[in-house]
Length: 116
Image (cartoon, rainbow, N blue to C red; front, side):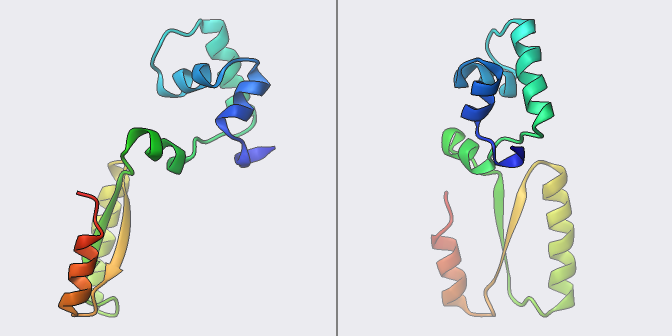
């Protein structure tokens, strides 16, 4: 099946509820060790990785930070963006890179579309 599995698929394969799989993944709630082992085995055998999008819908947090630079063709800005992205990645965040093209109206539009 592979990486297209859902939490429901893992629950079905392990013979448990989706809530139990969620508890195993988050490390929260009470789950018997034998059940936890069975769920983890199914997760490992199928290389399951939780959907970042699905998780963000539940947590209301995307762990994504937008960075607006003036010009993508400018090596200075790209170098800065590279270091920002590395820092964010190492701290569990993803970076969304946008270019304003030195246009204040475009920059303001990016600012208005941000989730504050």
